[in-house]
Image (cartoon, rainbow, N blue to C red; front, top):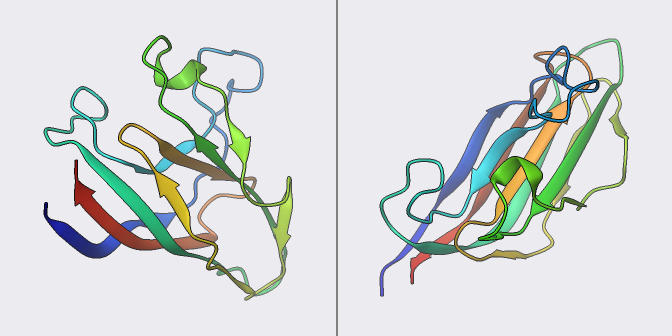
Length: 136
């Protein structure tokens, strides 16, 4: 059983796509990380993950930025966009200008589980998700 310590996801949170609030078929969140499961997001291996740290940094020097972060468990009966979502950070969390938020609460993801997020202002919140993946 191979274990890999790595950056699970990194990038910049995007805003909600236009039309997403009015149309339930348009995904609202960006997939920040999904534990690999064949058939999900092009994965070819099955892996579980332990998220050890999530870091979010507001790059904006003058304004606070609001964001959401949710956990989505795997459900074989529903496509990803229709699965139940659970907030894992406070709802409508706001980061002050140049504020760094670090969450070190361990989070176990089974194959096919995912982390979704979005910001209300484009190109300002930088994120890094660190953890461990293991073959199942």
